[in-house]
Image (cartoon, rainbow, N blue to C red; front, side, top):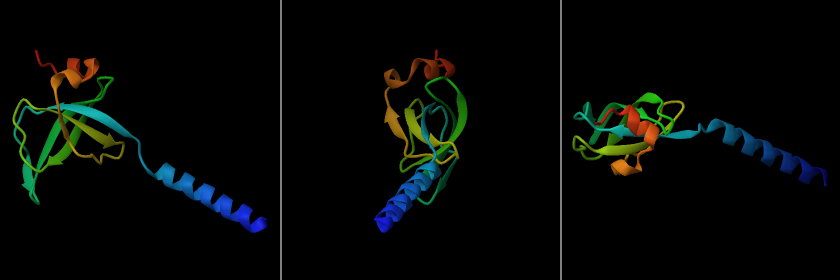
Length: 106
């Protein structure tokens, strides 16, 4: 019984450590108004301003396999520690209102 209790405690604390190490991801919405900043390892790197659903701005660096057309909207999940996930092309109507207001599109 004691071994089972120790094993359970180890598993529980291991799960807590792993969960605390992963940063939460926040979606940022970006209007591609310029060409890519550089090409690296067959990827195109963009550094542009993005806005979360509350309209808060953050400089986002993301990469894609093919260059994006100017005027494209993308959604990127970014961690607090600046890592970004894959950029997903989206339609303008899928951008939250506060983020869209900050983009000054019209």
